[in-house]
Image (cartoon, rainbow, N blue to C red; front, side, top):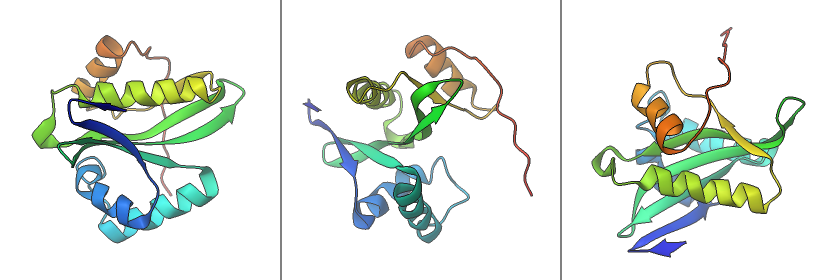
Length: 146
């Protein structure tokens, strides 16, 4: 996709993943570059994780990572694991452009829906998903750490 100096590309090499780390780290603050690249590599190999970046003026402005999944609840679907826009480029529509691109990709690849979770504290993100992207709030996600 290319429009007004905006390009969306899939990131597939460790070097490309590292270039996306400064943006991803704004969402995944608990990761350092090494743990991030190790997790992306393992998730890519074992789970089919894919990472895309939106470039504006040759700089990464937003990233999205997702996994194709199958559950009895959703059937074949895309689970968005990570979506973040760089803090310096927020409110320019980049998240909407990137998520719409993945929605179109999912439809083309035969998936039935896209699903994601969003932290309870992320009220601006919730407004974005519900009001701008027309997502429905359908469940709570529960977590138990060991």
